[in-house]
Amino acid sequence: MSAEKVRAFPIDRQVFLVREVAAKLGNLHGETATSFWRAKASELLDLVVGSGRDRTAASDEVRRFFLAVQREMLADTVAESMPILSA
Image 1 (tube, helix red, strand yellow):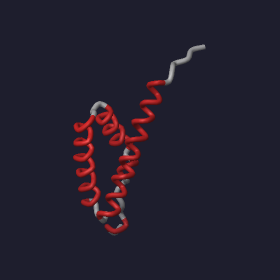
Image 2 (cartoon, rainbow, N blue to C red):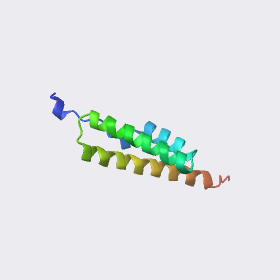
Image 3 (cartoon, helix red, strand yellow):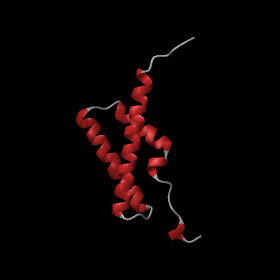
């Protein structure tokens, strides 16, 4: 198979990575959280560009990753606030 036909698995679909970043962000606040996210986004952008995507497509992929992280954090928040019911 030629190199131009091989695509890397999108980062927003890498569940372990999404959950790992969501867990870290969930424990950070304010400027610390912002700094962590900026560093992670830059790292991921470089990774995606390095895999052969153009910068615009890579930026879109990092945005989708951030949305996946936000969904994971929201799901964790909802799960934590739901009472456990017993019969």
